[in-house]
Length: 346
Image (tube, rainbow, N blue to C red; front, side, top):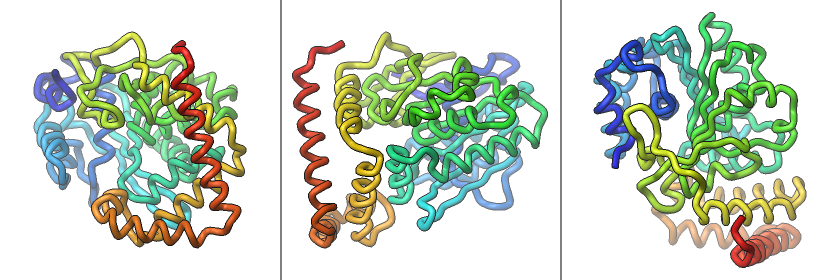
């Protein structure tokens, strides 16, 4: 089985002039937005990859292959930026490159490991616009104003959500050639029914792994592609598990039963909660986790005993009404899970 690392090895020596841009290229560029960058900005994507410090083995292989790939290394970095604010509950980063085939590509970074980044994701369940979405619209507008070229937009995870949102809200929508959403959460109903979304919808390409959990959240485009994954469960969210061929992903006919079951259960659960209750629940859960004094999901997990006691104390410190909401919400989720487990598959 082959993934994007194999793709970089196979196709990295072929320029876009020799083999046209394809969806796997879009995933590579979207994932490139996760690379750390420092000022002064590198001139090319290859330089950015060579300077990137990655901790995990897949990340190290990715930047090594990217820095040496003729297909990507000479792509000019037009701009990179990131913003992080605990006060605003904002986690955002974006990369704009000139791909060398007469196009620009805007890549939005997905959720990082910070608690703030995850909190902003959950805020999407009740907010019509979170700060990262607002930043994405501004970034795409500036990118369009900085180059006359047609633009492709993409992102993985939250980055996919930002790509779709920004494309729908962009002032230069006619310049957008394609939008790639790689297992990003869906959008709020208000956006999905809007004229600006419908105008860009035919250009949106959504890719979900076969057991997608993240990409089925909220309302998603009816038209999507299902990608074969080598992983199980939530680990399929990693782009390193997605199976590829020389010019495209390995596609399946439909999502598997686990993803469809999760989709029905989560939709059932959320439909039974008002936006106000969703907000109160998310804020309460964040307050509980924030009480650990840790900044990342990894730190909470690594120190689970210490974190567990602090979270339990924080839960006990919540007011009675909020504690009741947490218990009621958990009960609704369990009942929704039981109902949909018994429901016949569509």
